[in-house]
Amino acid sequence: MDDTLSLTSEVLGLELQVQSGKMRFYDPMTGQKLLTHEEEAAARQQAEER
Image 1 (cartoon, rainbow, N blue to C red):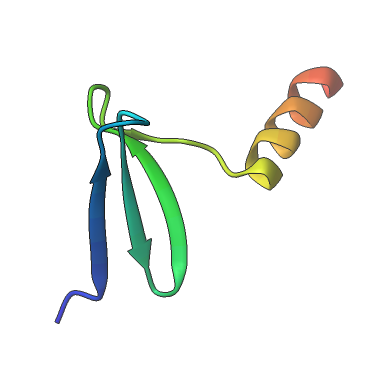
Image 2: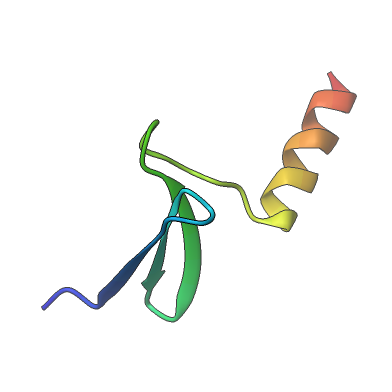
C-alpha cells in the first residue's frame, strides 16, 4: 500500500506530497523535488568547498 498523500496548489504552482510523514514540494513542470532548507544549505556548503 502506498502511503503517499498528494495535493496540487494552483497558487504555488507546486505539488505537495506527504510520504512517510515528511512533506515534500515538487515542481510538476520539471518533475523535480524542491530542496528542503537543510538540503539547500548542504548543497551550498559543498559548492563553496569546491
